[in-house]
Image (cartoon, rainbow, N blue to C red; front, side, top):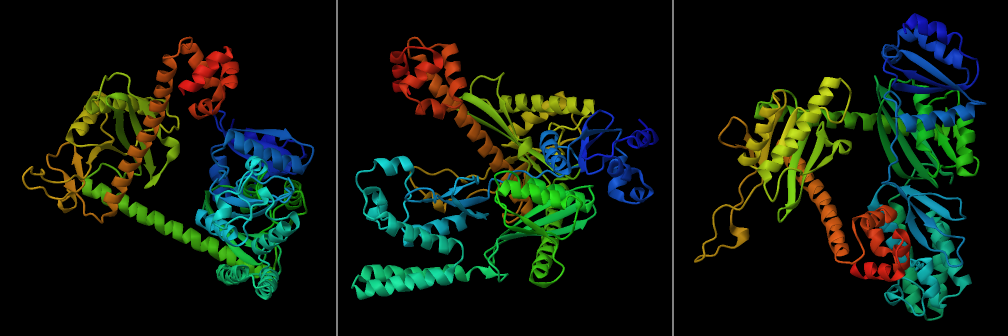
Length: 623
């Protein structure tokens, strides 16, 4: 469909709220957007003004069709847009991945004796949540501080209900043993309130409480308790010194920083909790959307269901669906959420700080990319590669006494791991331990896939890289080179990286300690060169190659261990009369993993595969 035909179709779109899907000639969804008025919003892509904006003209040059989905209101359109982006993952929409590295602390206030533990999901269960925290070290420091000074229980509810005597935590004075009534509910609740004061930054209130308790303990000649409160005050002051106060009011808020250069964008979320800056998250995006649309989509995805949403969010710009998004976030949080664009005062200063941080993060990222590009350029020049190796794959073979041979493939793009392209290969044509034949098989299968993708013209993770690295020496390199020759591959460079090793043989008459023997350098072998190439030990190029090799080895060993565990399970089951191939498969299919099979009791195993409980018991014992 021509652009003029498409424009005529768009002029007949309804003036209703909804979602529009832009597609290419092959029917693939390129972009998903939402609108309060579909005809007006989509029609704006065809205006004279839009032709002068690079982002829009670039997107529209690829669009062949536009479909719409009507919704009852703008709120439904926002929610549907988010759902469709997650489902179809359009190329020109931003997509925020659920970053599981951020965790929160949960204080289970609904329990008679609350406990504190780490969680990734926030639920409306009457508990109090603190965070999120980006650094695992920060979580450990906080939890250790609380266990040391406040002695909350750490055991789960099952252990707590069934314990008849204090555990080790009580013995080392990190718990007051409420499980066996060594502390009453009222006294325990006072401690919980102190924990809340600490986590919520109410330092003055906590300090006054601790000082009063210290004086009372001292007057009662309980000097051990007095010393404990003294240490609490000292350590608390040290802990709170590290927090930078950026606002005077105690409201929890997120401040969104934004910086754009062409199609590249940096979004920064600065988290302010009780007046102190706790964390900041940086997201680097590539987008052809207009700034208001991008920001709206970013916020809708960032504050997904189950994530912590603060009471206030400060934004650097407005967008049409702001009030609707505010309503959606309030529904998700279960309380009122205020979105604001401050122009003056303390909040405006916070917003400027967030924008400055976003710009600095963008500049740092750009410099890192230049540095990474420089490393790749050095690699190309030193090894005389045909092209800049932006995509590099590394291969390793793993086996155990000649069994369960597997090949591993890891992929780095622009010097960084691209885990979505990692692959495993079960060796099918080689018996026993034969690295050369295994490398040849893996290379033949991989190159065949690459040629198929090139012939189809489609985008795929199987597209051939600029450089392939083999873990090994000349023998492994020659095996891979033979596969290249058989598949007529000339456009991809091939090298091997041999591990460093201890030089010289240890004499049976004059034993030299291992730590006194010299270690050889890492060696890089090329196809048409007899001698290896050496890099200085502090070389960035060598560091990249070793990182690739070590990652391939780790990835292969990890998969190999899984296969060995599975084989061990099957070997154990093979020895049981009445358990054949079908029942083994049923067992794994039902429980989903070897770990869960081992955790199941005899009755559960028997029920899962439809056998007697006696056989279930024998299976359980064999595992």
